[in-house]
Image (cartoon, rainbow, N blue to C red; front, top):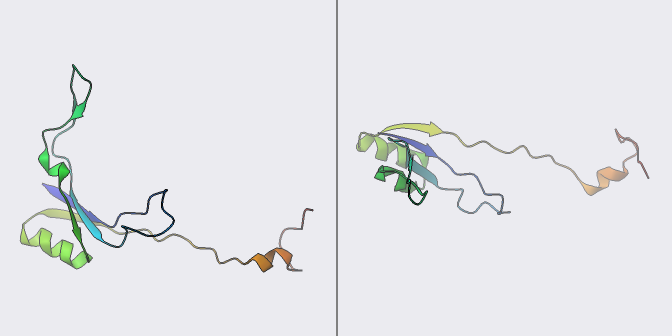
Length: 101
């Protein structure tokens, strides 16, 4: 039984950073999913995949995993690269690309 501790990224439907500030603990699947032959549903007998725990800090999540003897791995969040640009840069005299129109 292993778990991963991570901070979820924002979805493509969000412009803000809602639901991305908390850390989440999810269990890794212990058995593969199977397809029901009659209906075609995908199912699994692993109930731990349904458990998602939220923590305010990484330290709380790690402490919980250690206290309950859960093997874990921490996935650090990737910070987006932000370019600082201004509208006035379009009209600079020392532009790297010439003005096309």
